[in-house]
Image: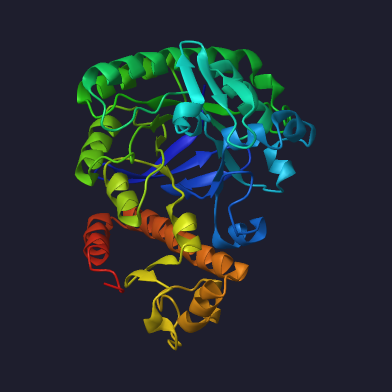
Length: 385
């Protein structure tokens, strides 16, 4: 299961690389904006392209419920359905299903759950998850896994890991038998999708080590670190990331799922991670919480009522080039939809620009200096403290 991945430069554990997907050659480290239902909230695709987004994430659970896998398949796959020509990754749906709590029932076969939309009953198994992801046609698929909650005792983490490893093997078996059914089969010189394994094991290093070793034996083209950013202390997350990443194959991409803040991205790159996704920049933007080079900013605050400065004087995005803090505050308080769009545009620009700066710093062998300066800046109090 080969996925072209060439390391171009290193900085201790950090790597700059290029990953060659069927729809896009992706420069890593890379941040993937989250497009839950086939759209990154408040940002149309042409603006994502202008921002330099190389790859985005689609959510299997939500797309399965609406509009449904057959609709997307008949429309030629998610790339064509949403008019996105670049890279796509779909998650397995497991995290969303396991977040349903009382609405789900887990067994060795899979998960029975009720839709959050209409209460209808559904069953998601490893095979079903991969079938849906093949129909969606993303460049990268994820095995069906159970995200272990925090805190979880060792016995609970052990049971969860055993289930996840069994589901990983079943996911791979189904994928190998059906990968030719991807909607764009035959369009890229015989290339197909890539299926990544997911390392689980809670916060227990020995379980994480076992998970990594057994997944490597299954021979996936890439590996994700799952089950983090679920409430654990930040330093514990960094410790688990460092210990897990160093056990994964050096010549293959490593993906930290669902984390996090800009400083989390920088610290995880320093520990050997190549790929990231998180709803934080888009969700915070819609709530008026903005990331800037001078600290975090809450646009709702009265201090910005007549502030004619841009959000971030160091940012060249459309929002910062064109609009004042005063105007953005007015739009937000007026409930104007444009506020969410402009705020999201800026936050995504900040994240994507941070990744570009990380890649450049690794290439120039200045990453450690960049890291220290970035974390020092991020550790300053919010502009609104």
